[in-house]
Image (cartoon, rainbow, N blue to C red; front, top):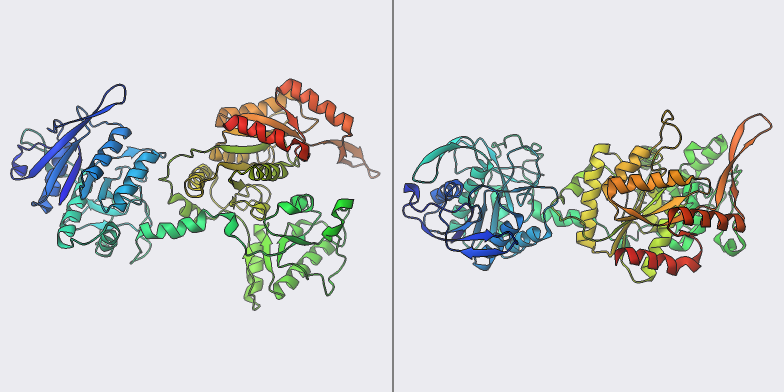
Length: 631
């Protein structure tokens, strides 16, 4: 057996190591980042000697290899650590002891690749966690390593196990007397010692089970852990008595969390209700952009603003329903359900409830935007023999926990394109769908993260619906961790060319500082989580140049991103006084000359194109503009 101690070297003359079989190398990096290998592995700091002496307690017959990466202080580079692991792989060691770690939430892709390669070759990498509770530390956090933290362990041959934790094992790390240089000893404690003890336990285990591979070794260690040994200031307490091995669980979690939308086929044909709701606008205007066919549109008996279909859309069966008749629910498999319970007319709410009841009785699937309906729908299914599926898109705490298991992944290395806006009702969601279609038609693989609940029905891999009646059920301070980790998983597992996403509502407050703001802070937290490289900004004809520039400046400051082009909603808000004396806001669509005049004015002031996103003649211009930014 060959055991590598990647550390500060080994003092071969220490009495504790008098009979050890050992050779070694030293890896040195110069100012130009070039790494050279020499044979001076003498320890001048004592840290590596202590680690080697602890492992030697368990296994006297092994051959020890000192891989020295600490020279005059216990500080080294990530590139040196990667080279040390690579050297260990090349030289066929069996166990690599890393009583060290990198405090970061974005370790390099190379470090992950090497640890995975070692695991695949059945080389056991044992790595120390940081001594501060829950500080991310690599490579201990990788599922392909055997991460170790410290605990109060009376018998150094015993160890503990932490279920549902990125660092799984606990070994002796409390205050003790350990060897140091020049034949001396010192008092020390910490996870470095715990790591060495666990490496020794693994060495003894492999000596008695010589045909055990890395996966079966981890399972064996989990099964034989002492459940009474707890970590010192680390993580969550164990949840169950006999957990499965986390490394094999991760593959199941990965397939569930980082979904390819092409694999989702449960919805079948869609029925849309209420079709006049603004959230349903894309189903009406872009029905061929959905992942599932839209076969029926339903609306309220009392509807004052439902837009009739154009001449080109007469075949869409787009008619308001006035009552439940025998064929109302025929022709679709899944009812896409909007926020019908917010209606001002009681008859409309009653109609919505009757429609939902009818669909449930007929075992139709329900895709509901409103998370408030979730308990109501589940209660209904408890009282009936229901064989359909109910889906309410959102972010649960369980999903957060699942996603955070992949925090070890390297940073996103592919372009992230965001769509933002100066206000609401600007077609930001439509803009995302158009860009997605244009780029896919050009042969690009697009992964789509939507902030709208209906996004999953238009090809989104996941939705983060933080807007109206938010279904994001995690604390706002966790949004950034969740979103960044999710984006890393999408990049690493799905391998798209571009990640596309977009915000809801406004980006910064309008007017004076005393006005109550809306969801602007939510939008900023979302933006900081997704960190777009470039963005497209939706604007209104009535926006001031100064306000648009301020919106772009905020995104630039927080995300270091710049706009590619702008899209303009061709209507303006006008205020009219009713006969009752109330002032109401209405939308007036600009005529063609007004629209072109606004576009020219904005283009001159903002020095970027202002594009009609719905005009298909602009598809080539849109594609070239995006390609130019990311090429």
